[in-house]
Image (tube, rainbow, N blue to C red; front, side, top):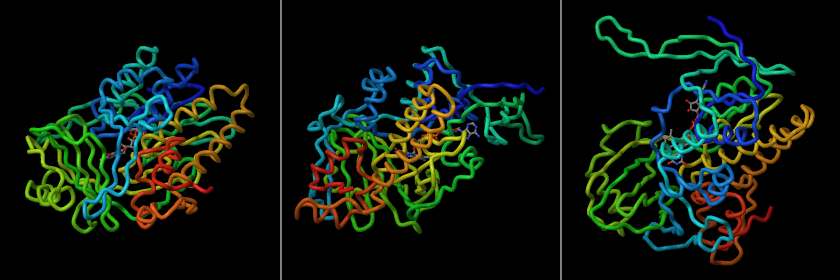
Length: 410
Ligand SMILES: Cc1cc2nc3c(=O)[nH]c(=O)nc-3n(C[C@H](O)[C@H](O)[C@H](O)COP(=O)(O)OP(=O)(O)OC[C@H]3O[C@@H](n4cnc5c(N)ncnc54)[C@H](O)[C@@H]3O)c2cc1C
């Protein structure tokens, strides 16, 4: 029943981060395996917005064309106050980048594109392969992988459950831990994942409408709450309304009074009175509970983190998924181009320093963001709503801060 496998690099998790790492390693002809405990049918159905730099990354791994054709492109994001006054405008078309817009796409579509393109490069994720018992030494990472299959179980009522069909003993020189926020690899590396802000609760609705919608992202700032509107096509959009924690339960389905049509209409009237389009259908409604975490470090020895295994941040700016894909590509590049293990170790330690520094900047942990003039006063007063929620990263973030009369003085 036991099978021994050795590989240079094992990627744990085939979400956006793991798939991006796999593309980068495939392009360099590296020896790697991509394992995921779920299968493709368990894809994520949330909407994400890809930042300009992420589109460049997808271009570099040759998948940008299908992403562009299946996404909605927005070149403006507007910030509103509680009186529905427009306080600031972000104009992506002014950025000097190859793709001067954000691309809104369902996460499962993005993952399908990445999986299909990986197949064309000759690689396939190993679905239903669950890693556990991860242990690292100075020379390698050893772990067990359960291959899972669906089995019929239950006496009174028969139902399908996953059961172990085969067990493998793996050894890898390095592990890219892209196994999400409950990462076992992070735990094996002994890395803390502290909470950085209080929990956030949202009521999220996806709608189709009878008439055309405003084609710009809107962020509505009211006290310590940040609501967001994302057009997902000319007649399809998503609202996420931030709720008081006591009024919403974690990740509940369609049963809460907060998700009923009467509450949706009240939320729209209170926070988005400009939304006049007659609603054709509410295609999805859910309560989502976000915790925000940032790992103490991005890896050690032979286990290195990318994506949600290292961070979870507020949803409006979509930072976690965008930055996670960059981290994955960066990590894979550092592992691919090093001529020997000493150089790999040196580059990986630099990865930790670079990535930790980047998140300190993205979340403005050291309070380096200052106003250029009095125009920025309102934004600075609401810095807790804005920092970490702006849909931008990399060089574009600096340019966008400039548009908002803000500077990162670090
Ligand atoms: C309900 C919900 C709503 C969200 N809404 C938004 C949003 O609106 N905007 C946004 O930007 N982000 C949103 N997110 C977050 C976004 O989905 C994540 O940032 C993104 O999926 C992170 O990608 P990742 O590749 O790092 O991790 P994941 O997508 O979590 O992928 C991790 C993978 O690892 C696999 N795995 C875990 N453990 C093991 C193991 N032991 N062995 C093998 N495989 C393993 C999992 O099956 C999974 O496929 C939301 C998340 C949730 C849960």
